[in-house]
Length: 221
Image (cartoon, rainbow, N blue to C red):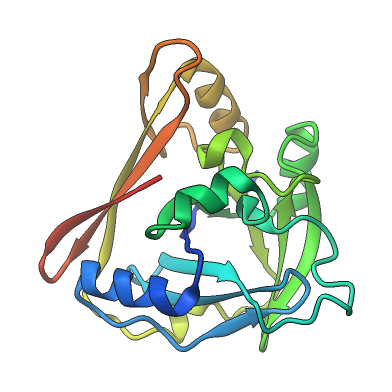
C-alpha cells in the first residue's frame, strides 16, 4: 500500500472567533481566512506547519441553517457530543489528527470499518474523501487518525503562507498502548505516536508539539 503520513492536526473550539483569538495569542501567529464545510455544518481556519502539514481550528458554524439537512450525520471529531463540548468550552483542545493516504478505500476496509465510512467533502475548490465514524467520535479519543484522500492535486499547504511554524512530534497516553500500536500499524503509522501506558480506566490523553517563532508550544487534548 502507498505510504500514509500526517496531514493535519485538528483543534476544536466552541466559538471560532474566540478560539482563533486564543490560538493566535498562544502561537504568536495569524490563522487563515474562514472556510466552511456545508455538509457538516462546521467552519475552520488553518495554519501552515510546513510544506506537508497544517493545523486546523474547527468549530460548529452557527450560521448554517439546520433546515437543509445539515449536518447529514453527527459532526466529525465529536463536536456534537457533550463531553467534547465541555472540553472545548474554555479554550481550544486537540481533538485528533488526520493522516493522508492515496488508498483510503483499501485502508478503511483493512481496518474493518473501525475508522467509519468514507465520505466525499469539499470546501471551496478543495475536494477530498475522509473517514467519519457513524457516531462522529474520533477513534480512541483521537489517538487513531482520521484518514483523508485529496481528490485534486491542490492541497491546503500550497495556499497557506509560511509563518515559520513546524510540527515537531506527538505523544499520547492510553490504558492499552498495544491496541493503539496495532491499529496504527494496520494503517502504516506505527511510529507516528510516542505512547505511554496509563492505569486501567484512567482515560486517554494526547498532545502535539509545535515549533513557533516564540519557541515550542504544546497543544493538549
